[in-house]
Length: 332
Image 1: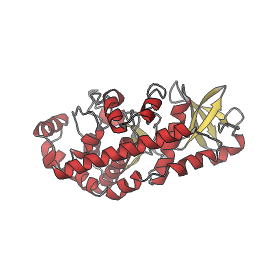
Image 2: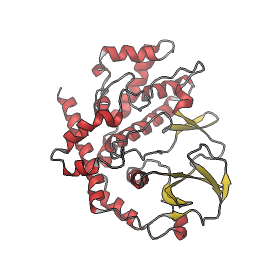
Image 3: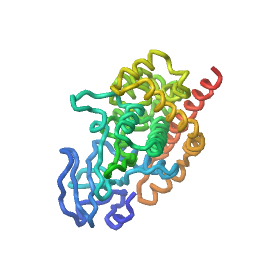
């Protein structure tokens, strides 16, 4: 949330961007309007649905609780359109590289949108192991939050890196509006709230929700066709648990010398970071939604009791499903 704009906020919590002093700025796309204000750049994106804007704010509040860097978002209205404004997170002399820039090679071939392929790219670029491990940890933490929030759209454009000479860092978390069963404008809210078995409801929705056969969806393993990223996560808890056919596909997917050895070494780095994630997972599993809703209400952003129950129950159900799967892996 952007406190600096509170004096422009209307009674419904929206910043009236029409009356904010600003200058037009070159827009990065047709769907986004850009403005310059006090040496910062702000992007306005109109949304078809109020629900998607709220999801950005909830994701930002969750990220604060677990100490993940997240882009700043707020509700805004511009020329009669409701939407969100975002503050540019690219620092001085930094260049933003999204997944497309990294995973598409000179021959225009694209590798899968997976953690492995990003880390292999960094290794090929000569990035130090310490920095790769830090990036790995950050991507894993974001991956866990995507699982807990039912993120549908962590595609090649919705994650990226910031580069400055040889310094590469993970970009802040952004574009989280397609989460919490956002697809189809909240159509799933009432069926989920009224469901007697919320875990089963999510399982049944998962194939259409996450479209795991689509290579644009971010995941850990290459060439997987799994219905739920929780399984994708826990199947990688050790190198030995990865089926041989998947290892072969992973090896085939990259064109590095000694690729099998390189993949195994990168995998071991990932495995170590995964084993150290327990403290983060524990903290994320205890996200305080009462605090989130209180923070939103301070900006005149009100949610109905049903909406509050919906977001909280979805998150907590996903946490339960995650720990269910963790328990199965431990006992198999």
